[in-house]
Structure formats: C-alpha cells, structure tokens
Image (cartoon, rainbow, N blue to C red; front, side, top):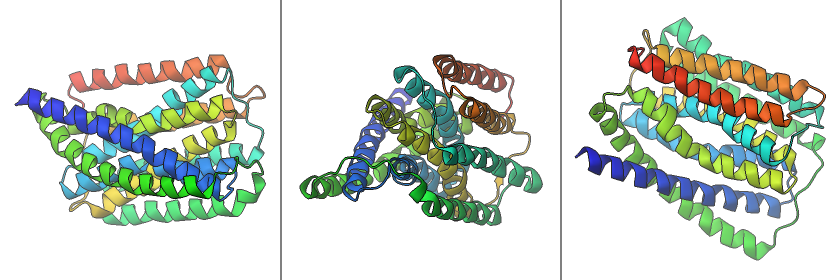
Amino acid sequence: MVIVSLIVFVIACLIMIKSGGWFVGSLTRISEHFKMSEFVIGFIVVALATSVPELFVGVTSALEETPLLGLGTALGSNIVALTLVTGMAVLLGKGLKLKEKTIKKDIFYMMLITLLPIVLMILGNGLSKIDGIILLFFFVAYMWRVFKQKRSFRKIINHVSREEAVSSTFIFFFSLILLFFSAEIIVRFGSLLSSDFGLPIIVVGLFAIAIGTSLPDLTFGVRSVLDKHEEMVMGEVIGSVVVNTTLVIGVLALLSKNVILLDNNLIFFSSAAFVVVISFIFMTFAESERGFSLNEGMSLILLYTFFIIIEFYITTIGGA
C-alpha cells in the first residue's frame, strides 16, 4: 500500500510539474501578446501563474482539513525561490546585476511581508480567518502598488502573434484543469505518506511538494536569464514570495475550518524564520554594487542545503 501511495504521489507531482510549465509558458505568451514590460510579466503574470500550484495545494489542504501541508508548501516554495531558483539563474547567467532602483525597493518590501505570517501566528498562537483576511489585504495592496509603478519598467518583450496567443489560451485552460486535479491527488496521498513514514505533514509540504511546485519557477528563471531578461527573473522571484506569503497562506487560513494551531511547532517557526533571514541576505546581495555574482549564487544554493540539514535534524528530535 505504501509503494502504491508513493507511486501515485510521484505521478501526481510530475503531472503538476508539467502542467505548471505549460501554464506559465502559455500565460507568458498571452502577456507578451499585449506588450507588457519585463518586470510586470515577471512579477504580476508569471509570479501569479507559478504560485497557482501552491494555491491549489493550499485550497485543497484546507478543505481536506490538513492545512499544515499547504502551509509547508508555501514556506518551502519561498525558500526554493530565494535560494535554488535565484542561485541557478545567477550561475547560468554568470552574475545578475539589478539596474532598476524600484526593484531594490520591492525586495525590501518583500522582506517585510515575509514577517507577516510569523507576527500573526505569534500574536494569535496560530492562523485564524481574520489573519487570512489581513494577509489578503496586503496582497491586494501590494498588487495595486505594482500596477501603479509599472511605467517605471520600460523594457518590452518581443511581440507574439494573435494565432499563438489564441493557441496559448487553450493550453492555459487545459493546464489549469490538470493543476486542479493533480493538487487534489497530491494532498490526499501526501497525507497518507506522512502517516506511513511517520513524518510531520508540514515536512512533506516543505520539501516533497514545495520542490515540485517550484520547478516551473526554476524553468522560467533559467530561460529568462539565458534570453537576457534579468528583470523578469527578479520580478518572478519577488512576486512568488509575496504571492505565497499573502495570497496562498491567506486563502489557506480563510478556508480552514478551524484556527491553524502551531503550538511548539519548531519546524514551522524555524522555516518561517529561515525565509526572513534569506530575504534579508537576498536584499543585501541586491543592494551591493556588483549585484548577484557567482559567489552569491553559489552561497544561495549552499544555504538551501543548510536549510535541509537543519530541518531534518529538527524532525529527528521531534520538533513537530
């Protein structure tokens, strides 16, 4: 039974990865058809698109009354975006220097936003529906801010034909359906595997699901760097972290039947703290004159390795 559950879980993850890639690619081409700027496509369009798998996992886990699975997925995806996705993009692009001052300001706001769930959870010893509304308010406020500043980013992507935009629309809806059903299977069998292997359910979301849902981000980041669209990489990473922190966790809290209790959950608090620390390091690299050099890119990847070691050590001592 364990082997069957594992096989089904892996297949569902592969379907989510593939459909997530189609979803991001189709939505990007649709956006390019309307001549949006690099940063707006990266932040608003792709960041929202690449967060759809996390959102579906969050919604399903809330309805299935396993909210910690969705919470772990959102946190894990943030860490992957700030370390692996950025680190790989920097290494392949042989460095990444930010030219727009507005992006650096967005990184600072991103760091502050990552503190929100921790503050709300400490104050209420968990996440309530009211906390969910607060997080969604910050999501809307931040999206509004990005729309207002979009004129600051002038670099436009090459035009996409109407025919390609139409075909991309069909792919968009097809991949959306696949994402919905794969998310439901992942949550159901992820919960079973958590019980079978004696792992805290938040760990399954933090690693197994988060890495799978982050692969579209990684694919998009690598492609953007190789095509010399650095602003899209930063927009996507910043946007994904903001969307996961506000929209995904906000919807998760709002749809959960009860308050998401986190009494003595060292895994959650260490992971959430790690997101904040990585955001600060990320901001420090971005503020430097040389930007993200090869050394910084390698450091980010090594930080993810360090995170894995710490979290599994906490799991072994019963930190859940």
